[in-house]
Length: 326
Image (cartoon, rainbow, N blue to C red):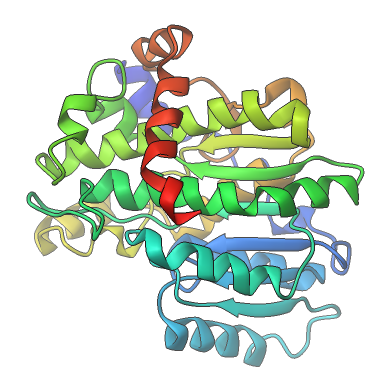
């Protein structure tokens, strides 16, 4: 990646282009939103920003107790709001284990007939040797294959949501500056994926984030016209969240001082991707930089590979791995 692109994403020179001030209280009544990893970090901050809009917001994650606490904390500190949303727990979602995903979607489907925006926010990093219960490399399994299955199963509800609205439904896939820094040449190394375990801590994480760029691009092609679903991949920014919980504490301290921003800035990028009128069907499959700027990822080798069919190939690779769990 170029030093200029790195600098612009590490230290955005512009103010956030979409904030909580752009969300009119009570204006999203009847809308249904779903956020993965919603009980902490960016996801939790996003829920807090959306709560006054009156929308129904599903908080998806693994831990029932953590989700319940997040909901309780938001509700107990928001008594004076003029408008409030409906917060609903969606526990049991372990994106590293494909067996958990369909039951969570079935729980959602028992309560809703439509979904307007899905934020695939949850992500994890892993040390060498890690693998998923299904034997996939842990980063690609948790950050890409799991969200792919989750989104695919929710597609009928996203499609229904677009029919009940004047706007397309949206799916937000989460990328990272790590795509530009550490993803392999061309974006995906299928031979490395076949190892079934994490080999390079940062490299495999970067590859899983690049996978989301590919999935957003391919989802735009497959679901845009047929289902009126708009897909966006974002770099939310470099943020002080628990994604760094396994890094050495001294490194985390240094990162906090040098490059990490409060989670609310990541939520601003998420909201831009979810609501901005700049993001239209003409930009379906686009990439968004912090804090809300539509701009291509600087890895042109990845876009060259997409043009040669990489996104479709990776999509089919994912399909083969999730087929028995649909």
